Length: 344
View 1 (cartoon, rainbow, N blue to C red):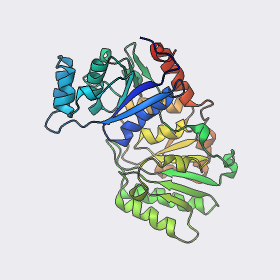
View 2: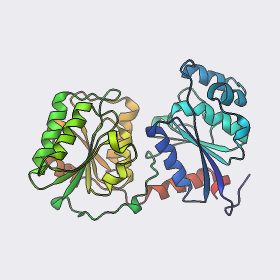
View 3: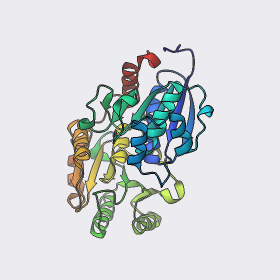
View 4: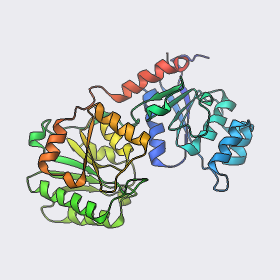
């Protein structure tokens, strides 16, 4: 059933409480908001520890009634859902709730991420970072979305890397197959000092998985007189959602290679970004293909931390071309094309 564009669209955003996941869902909702007014309700769910993910997917695939999925597994009364036009979620632990809510309400549903053991036909649209997982007609590979609007960034920095005044440094930590040793952190912080002596200043942000010792070193460095770090946005006190503060003040970014989400968000916000990798660095095949896709589009470059010098950084930045359009508009066009019953 098509909706009148004069009516606000009722959206249910299902979250697992993990910022790396619900921020992707928020990005999809932000894209939808470019097309029509929305009324968004947020529902947080958690898969019980006693119920393995593979068993839950089997129950869904074998037809356990959706009311039981919501009530028995997630403690959600199906009658409280009300009228819903669109359901959006990201993260594997939201998939069962997404499918069940769509069956109950008749709403179109979007999922961002990998299907795992679930069926593509249980979703109206699946968005993914991985080309190898975009095989069904309703699966599409995209840049990881963000709710942030690059057109709203305050950008008073020079456009030329020749006169770079402020750079951003986004620091993560060990994740999956990416492991940082003490030597990697020492080399990265030495580079911050080295390039700072040439007059460049840094805005630095850490992440929840950044080692405590590394965060403490950054905090101490930022507190020094004449520090190269003009601002340290410490997630331990600032909380999540501060990347926009950093990106609004910098003209280019150095980002540790552990997170494609941090990397993608910087690309999304139209900032040149260099991904720097530790000695212990390898990626799963799908993730490596996504990073290669970002690089082939000219949006990023990658180099080892030990290869960082002012000269190699400048050379890598000179090879980058930022997005020439607002990715929120690109995402909105995709949603309109794929879900015309809601947006056309």
